[in-house]
Length: 143
Image (tube, rainbow, N blue to C red):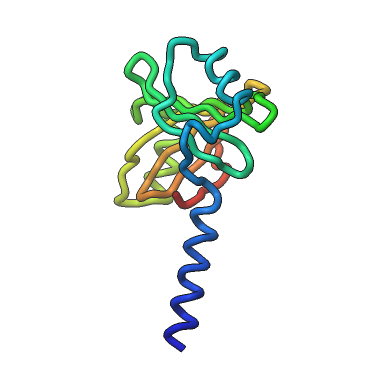
């Protein structure tokens, strides 16, 4: 019985970590690295992850934490830029205060997809809470 629980726990952990896997830059396809270099010349990726078949580069630009998601064909599908929590709209702050009472927003980000659609993310207790540009709740996901 204990062995079965241990196996299930390990399998569950493997499933959770499969969504985003750290990887060496040498293992990132050349066209993905080229797309990053073209968009962010003179910037080096601090780390790379493979996330749901795409490649995510995390880096600092002008002392701001950023990440970019690039598909296997080399197309940038999303950029995420860290912002000050104070830059979140009142609607987002109010939603978080009401639905996560007593919890603090640890980090905030502005996300722009390939079509230019803007969303915002508030991180609360290792949970990412996603909102539309006008502050409407979209979903939450555990880190």
